[in-house]
Every structure is written in structure tokens, then in C-alpha cells.
Length: 382
Ligand code: ATP
Ligand code: MG
Image (cartoon, rainbow, N blue to C red; front, side):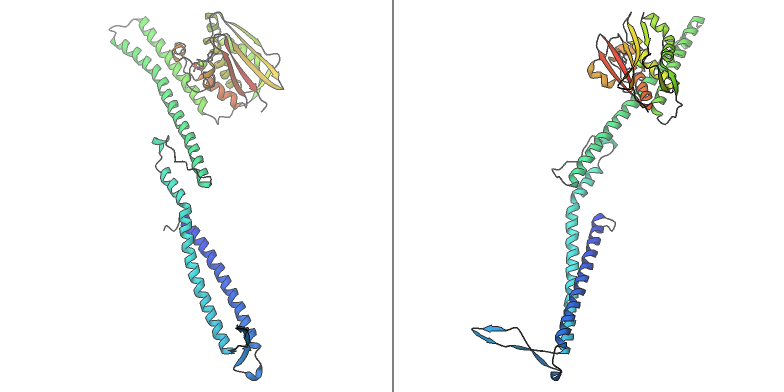
């Protein structure tokens, strides 16, 4: 038996308590017995100093009652007390040893399910996180422990899978621009005497892809950096959206998209200008990218039950209902092949959600396929 095991400690603790109780009982029994015997000895008449007869309980023999007498003396009392004490201590030791043994086996039996649970738990590693410990029908603490442990495993497994997916996606997104640049450089090497125009095209490719790599890395850092502190200031929503639309003018013109800003009902928010610019830029860029030619984008704000709300509405291709909860996950793209044409990594909405939540707000999306989408930011007071 291991001396640091729970079984050993419980046995030692219960055994000690048992021994102390037994000692207390024996001492008290011996004390009481001694007092009674002394009282009996003192009640003996003085003239019958050494030997005396005291009436014992009446014994019935047939119908005749015979008085029976027993001899009792001081020496006899002392011997009897000594014998009583000796018998008491012997019984105490035997009961304590047997009791401690019984406690040990009872504890071992009670802890057996925990021992079995432990054997199952140590076989679970990061490679078989989808395995579960066998849940018993028990309703006691061990049953609850098994179920809680399985719930924890489920969460861990999901989190590990999400991390693996995330790393694979990061690797994939970084690999694509690098491969494009490498291919472009290799093509140039094969040319005997490249023209100025070919050099220019290669440099364009390299520049476009390094910009893309930088944007992905910045987005990833923004997603991971939860501790970053930021200064808050009052921001005019009309000014913020005007700046974003003006940056996106070439894209808007290319797709002949009309834009409208109406933020009079809730004109000012408090937050980080830089972060909110990035968050709303992503939303409006999507509204342009996934819009139809000749479509429109409306941005407006309002107050609903004292909570400010900002709406970004477009007339784009929309998002299927079952995919709406997934679009805020990093690297998630609806209809991957179509989205790939627009060149996105699927990080924009994940970054937007992180920024909005860091301001203590919340973002939701509504959409009807073929009609358009509406993103709503609920501006809770922080
Ligand atoms: P990135 O923003 O990283 O350049 P992305 O635009 O593909 O790439 P998100 O902005 O995160 O990534 O959007 C995720 C997906 O959600 C998009 O690929 C697109 O399929 C869908 N989506 C987002 N906004 C809209 C919208 N306004 N209309 C239709 N689909 C949208
Ligand atoms: Mg986007």
C-alpha cells in the first residue's frame, strides 16, 4: 500500500479516530468499574475486616427462595479491577486492529471505480482525444465525475480540431501567394533576354502577393492579440463611412454600385478609430465584392430600446441560412470556388467580429439568397 495514497490516508485517519474512541471508552469503563468496586468494598462492616458476606441477588429454586451470599474482600476488588483493565485493553487493541483492517478494505472497495477511471484516463493522449471514458449508470460522485470528464474531453477535442484547422488554413493561405511569386520568378529565369515589360509584370506579381501576405499576417495578428490595449475616442459614423467608401471608390465604380450613408439617428460612437475603420471596411468591402453589378449598399444607424445599432445592407447574392453562423469563423468562405475568384482568405469577418466584441458590442447577420444581406452591430454601452 502506497503511504501517500488516498486509501492509506483514509484508513490511517479512520483507524486513529477508532483507536481514540476505543481508548476513551475503555478509560471511562475502567474508571466507572473502579468506582463501583471501591464503593462495594467500603460498604463492608468493620468487624468482618478481611472477609465479608454480602447478599447476592435472590436466586429462585423451584418455589423456594434461598438467600445466597458471596464473599468479597479489598484484595479481591483490586485483583478484579486489574483483570477488568487488562481485558478492556486487550479488547481495545483487537477491536482497533480489526476495525482498521475493515476500514482499509471498505475504503479500497469504495475507491475502486476511481482507480478504474484513472486507468482509462491515462490511456487518453492528444492522439486519441475522441475516445471517452465508459460512463456508468452510477448516480454518485464517480458517475458525475465520468460525465464531467467526457464533457471536458469533448471541449478539448473540438478546440484541438479548430486549432489544427486554423494552422492548416494559415499554411495554405500563406503558401498560395508564395507559390505564385516563385512561379513568376522561375518563368523569368527561363527567359534568355527578358523585356522591360516582362520585368514589370513580374514585379507587379511580387508586389501584389507580398501585399496579400502582409494583409493575411496583419489579420492573423489582430485575431490572436487579445491583450492589445487601445485608446477610445468619439467617432463620427458619417465621417468614418465616408472615408471607407472613398477608399473603395474604384471597386464601387467598377461594379456600378450605389452607396448611401444615413447616421443621423445615432451619429457618434466611442471606440478605436483604427480598429473600427478596419472592422467596417471589411463589412463594406464584402458588401461590394459579393454584390451584383448595378446593386446598392445602405449604411444607417438607429437606437432601439436605448441600444445603438448600425446596419450595413446590400443587394448581393446573399448567404444560405445554414451557413450564416459559420461566416464569422476564420477562413470560412461560402461557396469556396466563387469566393476564391474574389481573392479573399476568409479572415475579414473573423477580424471584424473580434474588433466589435473587444468594444463590448455584438454583430449579427441576416440574409436572403438572391436578395441581399444585412449585418447589424449592436452597440451596448461599456
Ligand atoms: P477576406 O475578407 O479575408 O478578404 P472573404 O471576404 O472571403 O476574405 P470574409 O469577409 O470573412 O472572407 O467573409 C466570409 C464569407 O462570407 C465570404 O467568403 C462570403 O462567401 C460570405 N460573405 C461575407 N459577406 C457577404 C455579403 N455581404 N454577401 C454575401 N456573402 C458574404
Ligand atoms: Mg471579406
